[in-house]
Structures are given as C-alpha cells and as structure tokens.
Length: 362
Figure 1 (tube, rainbow, N blue to C red):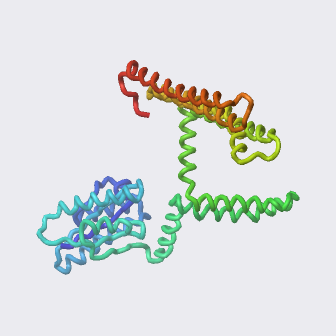
Figure 2 (tube, helix red, strand yellow):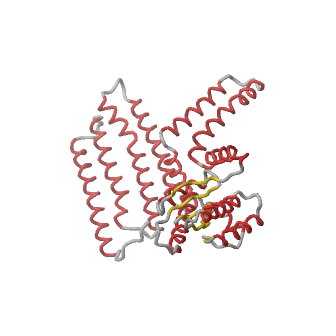
Figure 3 (tube, rainbow, N blue to C red):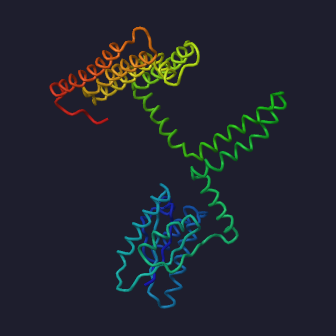
C-alpha cells in the first residue's frame, strides 16, 4: 500500500483553518486544501496538499492501493515540529487497516519541510520525496531558506555576522577619525577589539562568561550578601598585594628568593586574612538566609585566622625579625592548630545538639 504524506511543518493548516490534524482520506484532504486556499491563497502549503491529492488520483488510476494524509508540526522550532510530525505519522499508520506493507511518498514545499524526512523514514519506508514550489521561485526559495537558517542560528550569527559587522565598521570609523583629526591609533584599537573577539570565540569562553553574568544577575536580584563581601574581599586582596610589595621594597639590598616570598607574605597576610574572613561571613550569611545553614560553616573564618597566624609567624621567622624567635614560631603554630581544632569540635557539637533537621538544598 502506498501512503502519500503531505507535510506542513509549521502547521499552517491547523492555524489558519478549523481542520484537526492529521487529515486522512482523499475527500478530507481535498476539503482541507480548499479551506487553506480560501484562508490564505498565497500559502505554499496549498500546493503541497493539492499535489498530494493529485498523486493519490494518479495511483488510483493505476489500480494501486493508495491513501493520502496531511501531517503537521508546530511553530516551536525544528525539534518540536519534527517530533509532532512523527506522532501524527504514527496515528496515520495506526488508522490504516491493511495487511500490505506500507510505503510512503513525502510531499513538501521546500528544504525546510524536508528536514522531517528522517523522522518519517524511521517509521515507514519512503519511496520518494516530492518538492512542490512555484517553478519560477524554486532557486529563490532555497536561497531564502539558507539565509534564514544562517540568521536564525545564534552560533552562526555570532561567528559570521559579528566579525563581518566589525570589518564593515572599520572604514566609516576611519573616515570619522580622519575628519576629527584623531590619532591613527583608532584603527589599531578597532583591530585589537576584533582580535580579542576572535580569540574569545576561538577559546570558547562565551559560555563561561554567560554563566558568570547569569550568576551576577541572580545575586543582584536575590539580595545575596556574597556579592558585596566578594567585592570587599577583592579590594582587601588588592591592598594586601600593595602592602606586601611595599614591605618587600623596604628591605635593604636584594633579598634571596625565600626571603622575597616571606616578605610578600608578611606584608600581605593581615589583609588577605581579612579578605578571607569577610568572604566567609558573606557566604555563611547567604546560607542562613537560604535556610541551608549548618554550624560547621562557621569554621571557615576561624580556619582563615588560624592559617594567617601560622603564615605570619613563619614569614616573620624567615625574615629574622627581632620578636620572631623559635619559641614564638612554636607558640604560633600551636595556637593556629588549637584554634582550628577547637572551632571544629565546638561547631560539630553545636550541630549535633541544635540542628535536628537537615538544611534545605541550595
């Protein structure tokens, strides 16, 4: 048995007429074609449906068992539309009461609708695909579809159109720069921006940047304290770097590599510790507001202080400062260890006694 399938991928028939799809049977399909032609005479799917009727009649004259049907997709996109067509083909095949093997002839109005052919072929063998377009407009239709696909694809649009647009802007910018007597570095700046964009695309950083922007936007609109404390922590880190470099510059002569590291650490450790405490408290605050707080989270600022004590004492000892004796180093290492141990045990006990229910997932 031959099944003539007329494909309307964007569901013009369902949207512009009262017909429910799939439409099965020669008379019903012809009525659907007339209804669509009445609603929109310029719609190319009108030709597809009438062509399906025409093919049906040709095979009837040849005394072959044949049926015709119209299947439609939707306007949600290629994947959703193809899936909808596949479901309607299943319903058409289920309605055929025949013991013969079913083969299909697919009728479409162009390259876009033909994207669904693999979906149909997965359900029924396809003998041929018949494209129906206005004869004078066949090449134009294919060109239009190709251009439309390029403009609709975000990846292609960003890869081709954006660099092309930047290149096209170089000449008018150069003219404006010349008329305003601007320096020749304007073209260099544009070239640098284009190079950065190409490098950005080549390294595939757009997803990471988009994800970071989404997190920042979420933090702004949901009132996350982490956003504020992160900015403050970055500022403190910057001050710590400057402080460490200043302390290094104050040392006489050219210090050895180990003393250089110790000087940078000694000058910056207080500011870096402050940055760590601020960032940790911001995160703890957000967890508490999100009902995901656990007592163990309070360990973070104590750990930061403990590490800072150890680094401060060790760097001072390596710099051979007057107060940094071996006894001082041992006391600082012991104090840092005891501080971390005490906070861990204290908050573990507090969590076991005061936090009965598990926190909500964040």
